Structures are given as C-alpha cells and as structure tokens.
Length: 118
Length: 193
Image 1 (cartoon, rainbow over the protein chains, first blue to last red):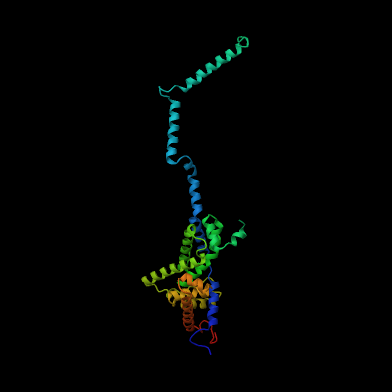
Image 2: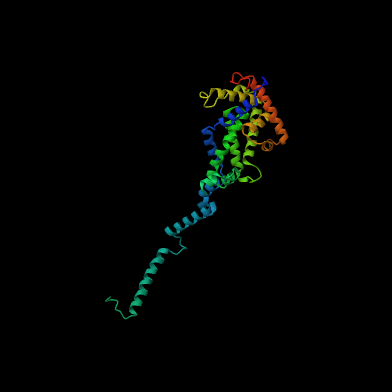
C-alpha cells in the first residue's frame, strides 16, 4: 500500500536523475572563469614580468641605466668640446697622419726608389 | 605533450600543469569542474545568478591555490565542493540577515522552460523542497543524490562521519518526499508514483 502523504522513492530518484543532467553552465560564466584562470596563472604572470623587465635588468636596473646615460653624455661632451686639460683627439689624428707619411717615405727610400720620380 | 594525453590527466595533475603555465590545463579543468560547481551552488542556493557568482569565486580560489597545491593530499573535486558549500553558506547567512526570502525567488526556470514545462515544474518543485531543508541536510542530499558522490567522500567534504552523512541523507529524502507530496497531482504523479 502506498503512502499518500509522500511521493515514492522511484519518483524522487527520477527527479534527482533529471536534476543531475539539467543544469547547464552559462557560456558567459565559462568565459569569465577562463579569463580569471589566464589572469591568475602564476608562471604566465611571472614570464610577462620578465619579458618587460628582462632587458632593463640586464643593464643593471635604474643604477646601471643612470651610469650608462652619464657616461654617454660625458663622452659626447669631451668629443665636441674637450677641456684644456684633455688632449685634443683631432690633433692626435692629424699627428698620426704626418707620422704615417714620414714612415712611408723612409720605407720607400730604403729600397733606393726615387720619390720625386714615383 | 599530445592533447589526448593531457585530456586523460587527473584533475590533480591538471592543476599542477596549470600552476606550471599550461593554458590547456585551465580549459580542461574548467570544462570538468565548473559544471559540478555551478550545479552544486545552484541547488544549494536555488538561484542561478547567485550560483554563477559563487561558482566563479570557487574557481578563482582554485586558480589561486594552484601554486601551493599539494598533490595527493586532497582531491580537487572534493576541495571544490567544500569551498562551494562554504561560499553558499556565507551567502545564505547574509540573505537571512538582510531578510531576503530565498524561496520567494523561486522558481528559476531554465532556458528550456517552454519546451519541457512539466519537467521544469517538477525541477522547480524539487528546488523549492530542497530550499525548505536545513542547510546541512540539503547539502548532503544534493551531494549524494544529484552529484552522485559516495558517503565517504561526502563525509570528507562536510567534515562528518559516514554514519552522520547516512543519517542526514535519509532524513533529507524523507522530508523531500513529504514536501513534494503536497504537489503530487500538479506535478503529474499518480498515487502510485
């Protein structure tokens, strides 16, 4: 004899079975969860950080970069307008040309060649 | 690693791969875990919109714990059910504090409501009856009969003994049968069903 004050075990089990198949995940929820996963992925986060700062760190950070800029500016200044205490690099270049021409002449006369004819 | 091999990995192994930077692992974990988390939250809360928020938060917690996950200590599924239940409990508590009538928000028809009216009506009735159960009883019934978990796993999720789980589910079933009897005819059940 069935108890009219309750539904049967079978009816309840059927309801449970339907319930376990019915709920579908909204697509927007799946998309949000995947976005979270990407944003919070540990290694990815680290690698992005490395990409942006790798070259900077290679230069030695802010201190290294500061030193590099200072050295560059100093070099440029010396090149354009050398102070009196520093020998003029352009003069060195000129001296070098004269010396080179003299060396060449000595070398050629050593073989008895006549420079005026050559 | 070939795609087939990754798909065959356990959730535990997938979580480790996610922590190591594998994006496919995140997609596979979402595919496997999110339906269970969302369904569980929806049955515990009786509200699809709130269930979405809880499911998203539970998954965020999974992504965050990934680097510290200790393989072999806990099952990912068990851990997620526990986190989901805790989030639902918090949400239900807040609702009660602000006096929102949870049952009044039901029914929550799914997208196929027009095509499966009676099936939907029965599911709504089941949800309304589930909402009327005490929180722990509802959680045990949903895990046992809708999620299909075994009593030992439910005991682990709910931090109870297996016998306590058996008792909760048995009482929950009886209560549901009585609650649904009031709508027997409306739901198309005969006296035999």
